[in-house]
Amino acid sequence: MSGVPKGTRTRGFSPNGRTDKEMDMTPIGSVVRSRNPLLQLSQPIWIGLGAILQELKSRRAIHALSELDDHMLTDMGLVRSEIALVVRRGRYR
Image 1 (cartoon, one colour):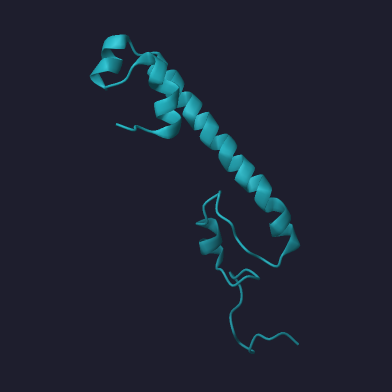
Image 2 (spheres, one colour):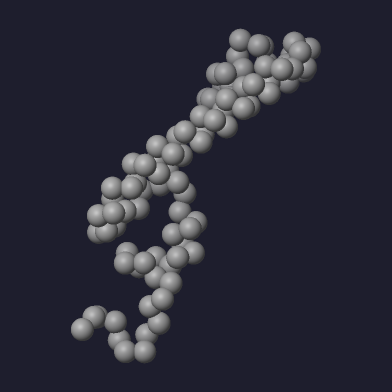
């Protein structure tokens, strides 16, 4: 017999007590502690996938900024040699 009282609605809840909606809202790179071994094994995959997606997003932004002429870049306060640094790490000024 399970520890759930009779008549209690359990559908929509995961083993670690989160609702399906809460699990969907969990960021890709966040750490979810669970007793479920499958979730523990898949966590590095999701973290790696998040890093790959972030890198692809950065490359698209670098490519888009690289296509601008020097006058447009200086209007934004950038120099062509700073594009990759600014996209990946942000502005320091």
